[in-house]
Image 1 (cartoon, rainbow, N blue to C red):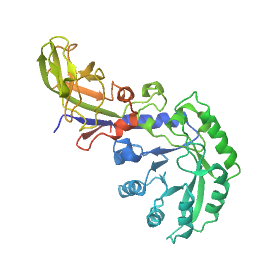
Image 2: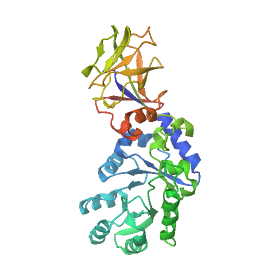
Image 3: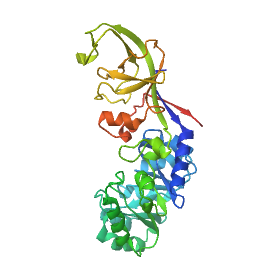
Image 4: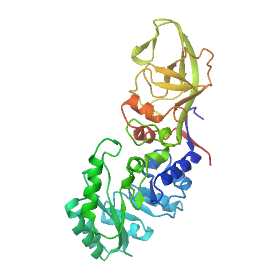
Length: 359
């Protein structure tokens, strides 16, 4: 077995769900587990989060995987359906699509289904990605409510663009606009993503939709999961497979991107961009060797990266390495890489074996 692994802490996942529920005690939780559970394994996440009130996925294929695995909770298709050919399976499996444009609405009106379906109405309150324009919310709701293929319009949902920035008043404007244009429409409301759940209590409504916070990551700009009482779920770990004693002036790795400033030990870690670690990350980014920070040096290659062991003269091949996770927030690594934690979590490659803990 290759040294690089991801450890998925199921107890931490359940802890984070409880944290979401405590932050929005009057709301039901639609747990976002799309994109393979944000890289954590969709089925294992769904089973661990059995106390969630429902699950949100991106597409029918993800929803069918859940049903085939015996997941019985309500499943919302956050992007609705992509063609009329998906509607029969949606009806038979009791999935709940979010209807977000006129083309979907027309297909739904024209379809011949084995049974009518429940739907959400998606409203664009300012993110300008998916959803009916605010001025069309009321007529779209009326068409859905009168459609023979709709058993119920569960309610109205929207998505917040800037909720991760607590100093940006655009979120308050979105909330006000959404409420004004959906006023009087029956049904429930779903507004809050992770950032709004933690930072904008006024957004909670009947349903909240936590995603990244379930995996232990702060949804707020510059934040760390621990600041919100969250625990990291994924730890990407490996080990030292070599320790090289180099002379001053000797270069390390492709292109000689790092030159030893003195005689020093350089460790080789069995992890690289072929495992999902970002290739373009700069020198100096920390990794944990034996639980202590050491800086990365040289270029990340496909299967290996190299670290400065001057602070750990006793390090040996076989010593454990943490690339992110327990003890080293993925948020910090993402900042160094010029990206967001979502991308790092989702890009871990299939060749990396996953090990469950806290079951």
